Image (tube, rainbow, N blue to C red):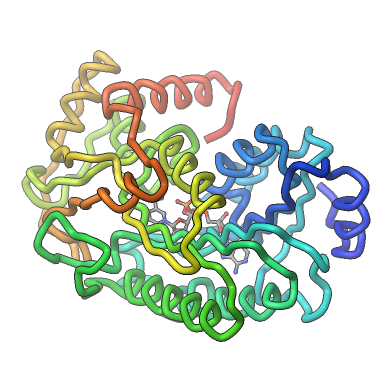
Length: 338
Ligand code: NAD
């Protein structure tokens, strides 16, 4: 995978891009959600410039493999780069849409990892990106924010619920939202903030619950459940998140914020029962104390996203888990990577 210069990206976008499509910049393109989003944008005929530092929060090798299908497209360019290290004035002069997904995730690990990591990846990198794109004639910035900004608010949360993060991760995502709003106002940059709720599906990050549960089923190892398993999450299938993100490109409001969730929450116990049914394997649970930063339940009011983006979560938990399980089995067979 060679690193290409931004100047090259500028020439190539002009040469390859069909008139009807847009040039999309996707940050965090090698990650779980970013790689799915870039694939969907290419399928819709857009030109995609992807940026990712391939950091080692989890296996960089699996991130490189997430890029394989994208790199086969002539309409995709990849830059292995940390956003904080991109020099000013080197971006392509014209980018239609910016999807900002690069960041440091992990609610629990944000209490145990150096705060600097979250500061650099979620706040400084966002501010750097904003500085880089303000002169690129961008039609819309779409920022991947998180349900973690809400903390333990009464459910269901609306976009107007007062954010009260319970973790350094949530606090840095909220600060990044603030930066996007400030730049949007100062530079008349159209902005949509999407607050994703617990996303899962093929290529899911290995630190996330469903991935861990499926892995436990596959390897027949016990899993730790923090709490009694009755905590609820509106698990959101990655294709639904991608659909919402693509719909945001045609948003008419100058500045908007939407909750994007899979609908009604399911408990971790429900989720485990579905996994046992899907995999025909029993999972041994070890119940442990609740972790810092984990709200007991999250649930989103998605009526604004329904009304303005035409968003509707389509993939049921049963069907989404079956697809993630299928992907994990292919991985085990060496056909795709974890
Ligand atoms: P991920 O870790 O798989 O992807 C993030 C990618 O960003 C990684 O590949 C990483 O290498 C890259 N990155 C990090 N800092 C960077 C920097 N400074 N410059 C360039 N690249 C950098 O995570 P994901 O689960 O795909 O999440 C994507 C985004 O969605 C994140 O911003 C996350 O906060 C947000 N989000 C995710 C979920 C979820 O359930 N997965 C929920 C809410 C919000």
